[in-house]
Amino acid sequence: MRILAFSDLHLARARAADLVAASVDADLVIGAGDFCNMREGLDRAMQLLSGMAAPMVLVPGNAESADELRAVALPEMTVLHGAGVEVDGLRLFGLGYGVPVTPFGGWSCDLSEALAGQMLDECKAADILITHSPPKGLGDLTSGGLSVGSTAIRAAIERVQPQLALCGHIHDSWGQRGMIGDSDVVNLGPTVNWFEIDH
Image 1: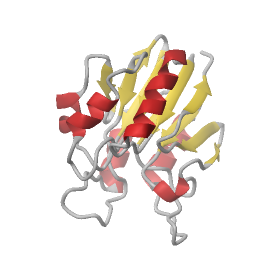
Image 2 (image 1 turned 90 degrees about the vertical axis):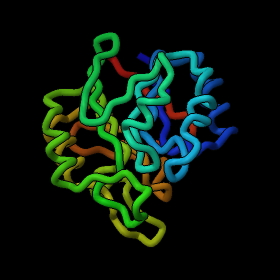
Image 3 (image 1 turned 180 degrees about the horizontal axis):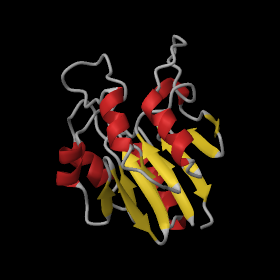
Image 4 (image 1 turned 90 degrees about the horizontal axis):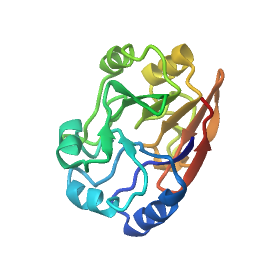
């Protein structure tokens, strides 16, 4: 299966156009959160992505809530937040929001490590784990060198060992990639990222 994945679109029209154009070659498109900005413009973000040529699986970022995303999701979009779905035999599990709680204040949709851990406990097996936040220690460095990833997400990757663990959230680490056990972990960013999964 050929998968196109991205995160942190933040209403970037040119980025969305690149992703839509690339989607003609995709079997599945994954969006790892932050489609809009500070809870504003989510409907516009969905319109920017409305030309996607493949089904989409999305998780909410910290810039939109799960309910807000479900309310505007287009028919070909599946929203995951503490839940899984199977697509052509491929098992996906998604968890959105900022983990741990961000310093951004009231508009940001965040989870504590404890609550994120409880929600991730629902994931018994997955080929792809999609989270908005990165795991602690990989793809999680800010421009100031702080490691701000999630210990709960890292523990879930270590336990489940998905083929792919896809995230975003920390803009300074877009494009960072590494392994946790046998899992390929990627902080995506809003560019065209391709993955091939055999299952």
